[in-house]
Length: 474
Ligand code: NAD
Image (cartoon, rainbow, N blue to C red; front, side, top):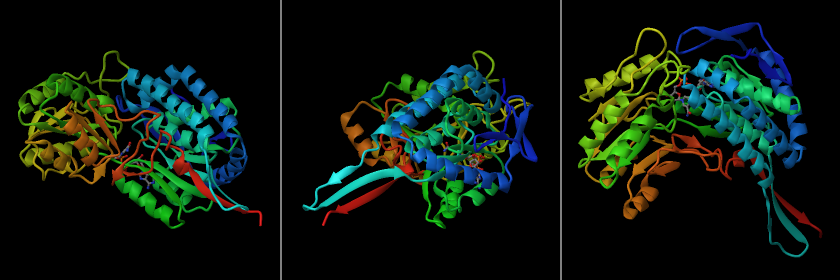
């Protein structure tokens, strides 16, 4: 069920002289060997992408869209095979992996349509002059996708690039390469010209430092942590290369006194544990009005403690392991720091079992502001619940981190909703729901959560340049 892992360069699959194991995080068993790119492979990918750009940027948006839709249809057909690979390499429950495949296909389908709507405009001018504004593909894209959504993260980047008429070299995550391999296979079978999509794996620092400063690369698109995003932005700035940065988040959830407490607490606990909390929009810092704090906390903790944790291949499992071994000590340290500073560990707090990277669903209550977790994104199944005295108090606390990706609130009061819309510093605000993004909505952050948007009618902007034309007939 797990695919053979290779690099895809200039329309050919290749191995290299170096490889590394890919491990199932639920069993710690090896699933396959992943070839690591050498500099010569990266130079081949650059050469292929330059040639691919010439072909693809001259292909009509409709034709580009048709190819993308054919590939997306193949991904839908192959849903089960792709989902099983995702669960094996990432650990998430199979039902969630199946949904991820569909979400990935939807990203392609949305951007395929957007390809035909990259309109320019005419600006009124004096007789004998014409001003027109054109949107044109930016060039070769160097993209880096993380391991938390092995299929839908690469899909976002590839969809934006290909719909815009760019070629792309994607370095997908070494821990979870199969999602991207399946996407490349689908595009190969859909007839994408060679060199338009190139897929590499290897040492992340080696690849980014080699690719980013190269002339043909005109956009660096990255999803991952803020420190790495900052580093890649610095590398890109040497060549004045554009960047699209989708970085970390530390989502606040403001729970007001007028809400349905049981529904908000139950959905919060379920949502927090989705993907083992390894989601940049994961709801993490719950700020609950003091009048409903106890009821909310009791309900939340009880539901979190009931989460069925196990191998994502098994029926009924709600939460799998963490995706890699690094996350276990990282989460343990955050919990221990909060405990030492006076927080109550209401449930969980430790590694689960001795085999696989399982971590208990964890809820920390009354966490002091100086605990590390109040500023650092846990990126795991750990929630913080703190009481607040008012909406003012909640908004101040929500905004008290360097991040600004997703934010949530539960209330039906119109005056509260107006204030939340105006004052919460995030790129995505969701009210009475813990959903944060759809293919048709723009997704991205403010502050240290990055810049640029993926999805929505804004999603192709970063992949295109704006060219103004002044045509004078005099
Ligand atoms: P990390 O900071 O080491 O790596 C984050 C991502 O960046 C990984 O995919 C990694 O392969 C890549 N990366 C690291 N160094 C790189 C380099 N020099 N050049 C190019 N790519 C590089 O952290 P990690 O342990 O893999 O993940 C944990 C942290 O990453 C979390 O705390 C979270 O903030 C962040 N993260 C965010 C997302 C997201 O969706 N925004 C996804 C995954 C990880």
